[in-house]
Length: 113
View 1 (cartoon, one colour):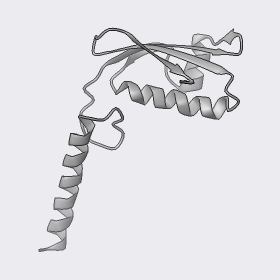
View 2 (view 1 turned 90 degrees about the vertical axis):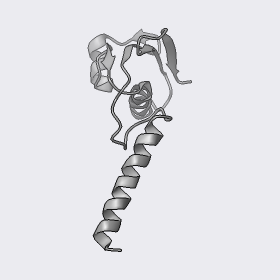
View 3 (view 1 turned 60 degrees about the horizontal axis):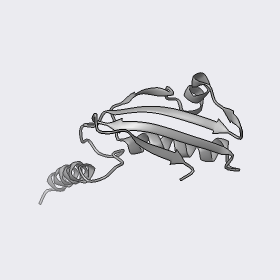
View 4 (view 1 turned 60 degrees about the vertical axis):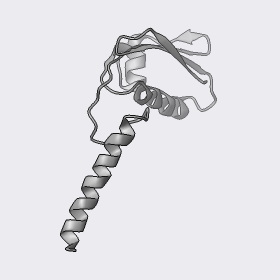
């Protein structure tokens, strides 16, 4: 077997495996599967007794306080979790995300959980 053939086959198998995995996983960072979820969300943040304004939320997460994302909701949760671990390691912040995936009933996600 030619090494080029083996390399090409290996890459195709890895890509195929990533696509299959994406069908059953919440995170979809390292695969070429299509983004087939529309997540409508709104983010509310309070630090201590103060709430953050929409523009502060945008700067903090690099996402608007309200919007639609064409990726898994888990992607948004991971962004928020990383930002909170960076900006508020003492754990003073509380985040509430109300979201709906593909038009299904609204759900809530909170940080810290």
